[in-house]
Each structure stands twice: as structure tokens, then as C-alpha cells.
Length: 286
Image (cartoon, rainbow, N blue to C red; front, side, top):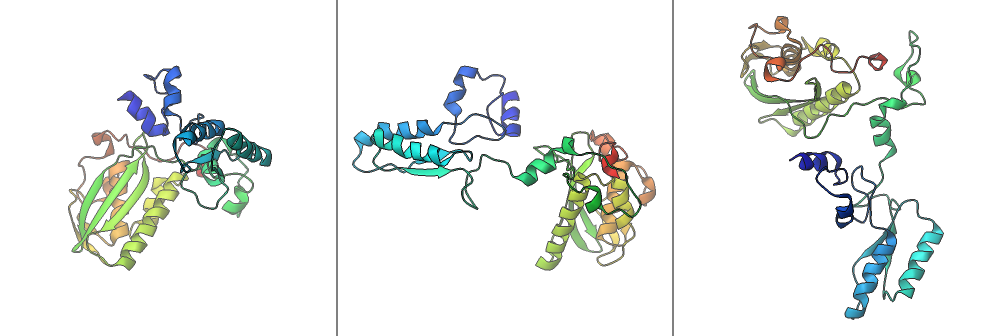
């Protein structure tokens, strides 16, 4: 079970505690997997083709994979080696040489900048300074939630419309992602709600305090609204976003003032470990 968690979290068997170092080669692939460092060298690909060549009349559908760092000379050597070993036909591919490809061993610049929060450097916050000016020349920290994700789900009835609300959390129990969906609404409203979910999730993962989200969405008024069914503490809401704000505040921040019926079970009662803010205490939250 421990090994399965490591493999699922890192997308590689490297580092699995029950796996011996001498057995790792059995699991090597054409490219590096996850955050692993092992792969089959291109010479191994050519050797495999050469081993099969004498036993068939045609060629083999097997690509020789070279890393993104491969030079023109490396590709030339691959063709020459294939010829010298008797390979009848060979297809050579350098990782990342196409705009789109089914396999990739390299992380994009965006993913690296989003995950590498250690590269962030604090600056003096001047009144009137825009976020673009503040983060100029450095990545904006993004705290991605872990895999697999866990969190509470609510099935609500707001003004006669069925709404599903799911909140995935970080390991400390603070909210990381929000998903909203309708039971039976048209594609336009469903699409707008999905876009709102993405925006809220990105805000949480980039350090926006949950209190600010609640303050921004609480009290907004539009249909559907009115009586809320499916929640023990929230009985009335002026809109879907108002309901979302009130439920988040009550569940994660123990805000009884946001619901009509005080009390009830909250995040800490379910073992989610509620606290006042989702993001680490640092200047990232400015």
C-alpha cells in the first residue's frame, strides 16, 4: 500500500521502499516518467530493433526516442548505429520536436514557475502598484493541491434549482478547489458556473484568503434565490454565489453569523482542520 501511494504521487516506481535498486531497469520506459530520472537510452532502442531484424522480412514499428537535449550529431550517430547493426528501417524522434506529442519527458516553463514558489522574492509593496509590477520578472507562487484530492460535497436546492458544490482541500484541510454544477441547466449557465469555479480555484491556489472570497460573493442577488434545502444550517440565500460564500465561511471558518441556524458540524469535526486562511502565512498573500 505504501508503494502504491508513492507511485501514484510521483508517477514513477523510483523511490518505492519495497523495490530493490537492481530491479529498477525492468520498469524503465522510453522517456522519464513523472519526477523520475531513469529511461532507456536510445542505443537500447536501436539494439532492440537489431535483435528482431534477422527474424522478420520487413521492419518493426518502433521509434527510437532521443531526449530533447539530443544534438544533430546524436541523431546522425543513431542512424549510423542502426545501419551498422543491420536495422532495415528506423524512425528517430527527438523529444519535444513537435508542437503536440503523445509523450513528453519535460515540464513546461509554466508548470515549473507555478510549482517553484521558492524562486519568489518579496518586494516592497507601494500603494497603487499593480500585481504585474509587483511580480515582474519572477513567477507568481501557486500552491497546487495534492493527489488524490479529498473534500466535502453538498447537494443543494436553491430557489427550486438543484446545485452541487464540491470543495477539495489541502492536506491541512484548507480549501484548494471549488467545483459547482447544476442538476438541469442549459449549457450557457453551466459554462459560466464552470468558469467561476476555475477562477475561485486559481484564487485560492495563489494565496487569496478565504475571508476575501466570502466578502466578495456574500450578498450578491440574482436568480435562483430564496429557500435553500439540503443544508442543515443554511436556509435562505440571495443567489448561488451567496450560498457558496455562506457555506464556505460556516464550514471552514466556523462563521455562524453567515447561516440562519447556528452550530452543526464543520471542517474540524470531519477532520479537515479548519483555520482562518487557506494560504501559508507569508508576504505571498499581499
